[in-house]
Length: 264
Image 1: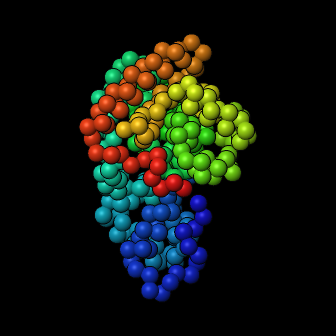
Image 2: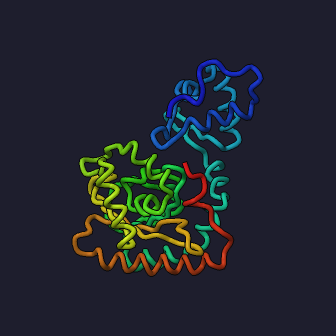
Image 3: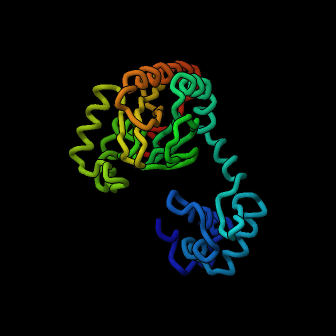
């Protein structure tokens, strides 16, 4: 993500829009920013950024680290969890995620599609020692994650076409050829689950299944393990049981936003 705007700011721009520009400077690749970098990415003078950042820290939307950098604050995170997709889906899915963790002892992920990314709305950390790539709130590549492949397979064609335009290589094993990814998505629709093998991070494999509400895929449920060599059938079965349980619970809940909302 480049600067939110150029160096010159509109004279009549509101304080609110400037504060939001500072918050928008953070993304998956910029989780920690110094004041100068914040000002540059938000496209505003350093003195203005300094004043607004102080207000955001006081409110709790930003926090300052011991090193002097800034990170997203806990209060902003707590507010974000109240969004309908996160709060409603997390509440409904929570007992099923606990059951899945109990059955597999693997790291469990629940994600929805947010534009061209997989947004992780819940996570339970497993027993295996694995690289931590995804946390709650992470927005990761659809083509390189198990949950992402499930969501992409069930996404509208315009979304798939947009993702295929750029498939960055995240590890030596990431699928970067559109034809190869399209073949995998066909298998996801046929088999009902997706897999990855060290495509997002070395030493981590994943398997994921769709979660539906009233016939529409609204989320994906996955587990991350060191290898899928032996346990794939068992993991797929456990995932499908949990996903079906979430789907049954969602039948009694208000419609969850997700796969078809905000196409691009």
